[in-house]
Length: 213
Image (cartoon, rainbow, N blue to C red):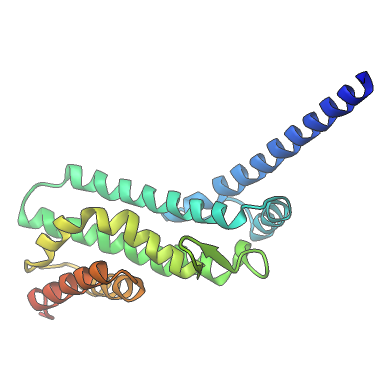
């Protein structure tokens, strides 16, 4: 009986060590990739990230959920960054334009750098993570990334954006094109009819008020 208890204790201890080791790998992987959402680049080499990802994938039964959580966490950090911008700009027409320009820059980097990196593979490549589920069906990493951006960053501020998009803005850079791209792409990947129509209407209003000048 004592022997059985001893074996059970050793087994539990080993399981706990394995769980801790697994969590440490994932924590390290997140730490090295999270700066990518902030425009700071990756920590460490691609080979190092590949090695960590392989170790994590071999031991985890929740790899898809883990990656989904990573993307959600990154997008929420972008949402916080935009909220911080909103807190310091003046409530004027110029301030509204600056807010949209910042949103355009956040989107452009996320879509053209962060999302491309995740989509193309790099440390999430080959057979490790091909699909990440966030609904009843499996979606590609690109779809997950776009829908997460829409759900966690754009949709919560939709009322303010609807108001801003109904006004003309004198952009000092190419923000108009970036915002048009953002709304068009996000509307195209949204399956919910109400949300899709809402985004399309916002896009049309923005187009009508902000033609090329």
